[in-house]
Image 1 (cartoon, rainbow, N blue to C red):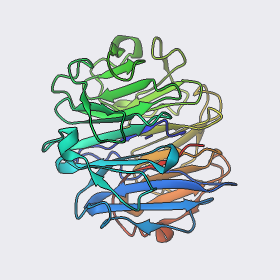
Image 2 (tube, rainbow, N blue to C red; image 1 turned 180 degrees about the vertical axis):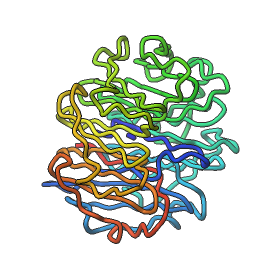
Image 3 (cartoon, helix red, strand yellow; image 1 turned 30 degrees about the vertical axis):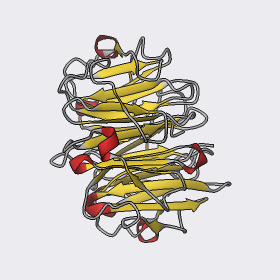
Image 4 (cartoon, rainbow, N blue to C red; image 1 turned 90 degrees about the vertical axis):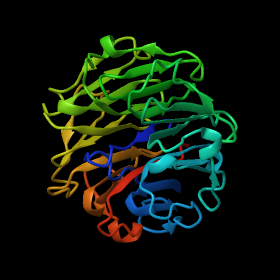
Length: 340
């Protein structure tokens, strides 16, 4: 979720309109992007504007008809995809070859909703029944962080890894925690973030360590001190009362947030002010479930019914890339981009 994809991604459970898609756009240099969705939809591209170069990875990733709920991309073409029924796979070559990590990661039958890769290659995956694990060897072995993270049996829905490998995990019933030591210890940020019992769906960490978390009833908050204090951005972001499913932070601190009822907003000042992009993006009546921002500020937003658009001008204009990505009417659940 996720871009600087030090961000991470997490998708809503099947009955919930959270993350049907997520992504990034381009301008200038090529950007490696991974997108996942329902029915085993998993594709990659290496492009400057997402208009070409999409490759179907369903067979290579052993996805079959599995719903892919979360994706992450990191340096050196490392990728991580997670989903229903304990699906978790890794790739070290940009998606051409994948390795099944379900046994190593101890996913069992859990749905894994969120995944992230940090600049050092550390991986973080979160999911149902308090599932939260980390890996420092490309997914070969995983460490269970359930107890350390106070996850209990909670549904952990989103996660992110920042530029200094700091971590953020969010979930149902106001779950929001941070870690600065690779997941060994975690600090509860429920009170500081004003989350109370709110279901928090998505989160991101920016290049300067700034954080954003979003959730139900228009919950959207930002932090610039590692999660110690948070600022409520609901009013600035259009006073929504809907689910805000996923945020993203770009290389210059620009922000993008998407949600239900055609919600898509951008900010260029840390969340203090936001611009409504629903008309410009051509989202129509779709719910937007995912988003990401690439290493040169290119944006991608995705949602229900195969809706997927890219912007290279900060959200002012958007290009429809449904056909290029082969999305059809598929509900796409997640995407991520390799950071610069």
